[in-house]
Length: 226
Image (tube, rainbow, N blue to C red; front, side):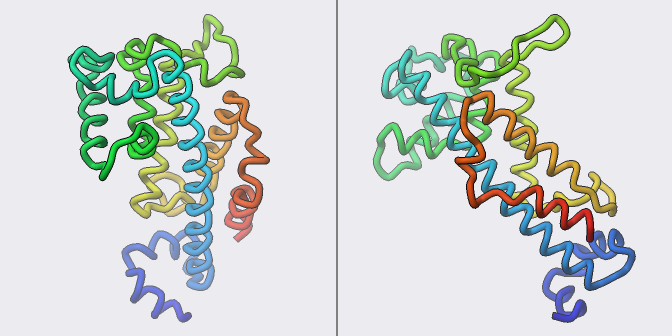
């Protein structure tokens, strides 16, 4: 496809950043755009696998302590989330239940988004679930006076993944320095490495889980060499 036709579809406003980062080389700009899409697809897939693994292990831990319907019961009057500090969590659960054509606990778990599961590590929700959720990361490092690997630390790491997930969902590029027309894959690499680290803390064999799905480093290298 000629660049003029490509721009007509994608718009010059979207493509200008790619063109500038490639020194005005329109063929490279189109290649970079496609490589960014590949990188986004791969990284989104990896984050999705992590999200499913995380919510499932949280559910296992909470079910063992709070019962099979811990989410639904937690949002009821007198439940663990029935207080002003966890008001949004309670609302999110009830909204998700109302969206389900028919209720069962596993459908509810799947209905709740990444942001919901991230907030299970916020202080109020962490306290409400009986402070058990760091158990989902049995291989996390031991805290030191200088660095506490506590629920707040996990909450903040998950926030980084939530942010890049939202960027990709809104079709924002992840192959540039933030806010600049400079090709750079460090942003994507850092978040990819964070996912692998969290998988390892969860004692998940990430290489086996992601077999055939994960070509992120190769795509990043291709973008760097472009």
